[in-house]
Amino acid sequence: MKISSAAKSLVAGLAAGATAAVTAVQDQVLTTGEGVTIVLAVLGAWGVVYAVPNRQPDQATPGRGL
Image (cartoon, rainbow, N blue to C red; front, side):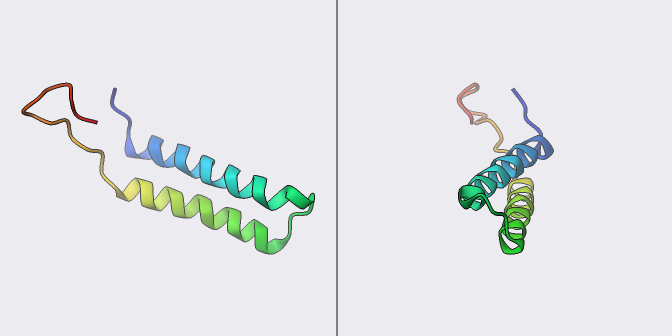
């Protein structure tokens, strides 16, 4: 199954943002600094995952690539 870089980065951004948000609201208060951290986690995940290319399947052993 082929997964596009955009789809991978979207999922990674949502996961990073959700993780940061859950950690930030442990005290039931969301401060400005915590909000900034959530936004930076999402943007960072989007950028890093989008920049890393998908690995191509190994041509010598078809079906064995990631």
